[in-house]
Image (cartoon, rainbow, N blue to C red; front, side, top):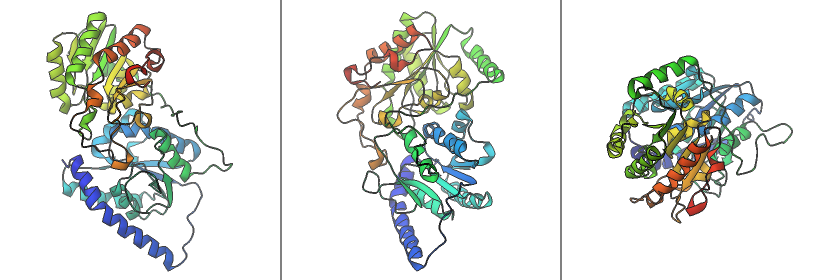
Length: 423
């Protein structure tokens, strides 16, 4: 498996000269003679490029739906194969419209990239929206497709690393707006409204909502059966705990001992609550550690038990999710499940979950330390921004939600602005 650090090195050391060379060729081609202008008619097939993080697939969903609402265009997507399950969370894209790039080896990556270029031409894609945040690799892929109408983030005089001048419709990244709004601005650049009116709220604090995902009786049956086999008789309420975060940014993890303390506090106060430690197979070491630390039969490790496609049904059966800033916190936006998301090195105003969520952050002066300018990477080896979020803070927030019931919004219940928290 090609790791995230390898991609970053390739993006920097190979991406910069390639982007520079393609920029020079593009400018020379324009100077060689006039070309037919790019058609401003509504596109027929639009490709969204979203490779890296699974949670970003949910943040981009309002943009995908906005495109469908404003045109009759068929929407396609290219992403890494490991993100396939994330697409099932929202259900916006059809499987045949998704191209998957494998990252198991260099030969797989290069071969799939070549097949992707052929796929774009065969599908007659006529517009591309590059939703990656200043990735040079995706900028190069977009140019190599030969599609003339390309939309993507351009740094102009603002934040962001160099990746040339490779877009026909460059868009300035706005760090003052939520990422979902920035994605909507990409669609806005591709489809300017005829009357000049803004197609979405311009208030920087007014992030869009995710369309609720309906859960079928069959999906509920599968999840209930798995729970019955692992947990036994279902309790009145389920508290989901996601103590994991991807290797892309391990500094996002709240200490495992703190999660254990939170769980003990909740179980001591609420007799009707059962805690499920959720995660993928690769998260089993973390969940097993917390389960052993808690030492209570009402805390059950279910890492690897549920697929991503089954999470909406699990969310519909649960009372609360407490999570690091990672995929599940964003996936829950397709449901009414209250979420308490713990933020440290990342920017809450940009990446907070879109659903029924509240954010708790220590608010240290050094946080956030990852941004568009440094390609969301940090050299921090001691994530005090997460360690200084106290068990009492999170326990109090969880207690408020559990006492109020599922129907209430956490952000209306938690005074998270005290002690440096953000609601």
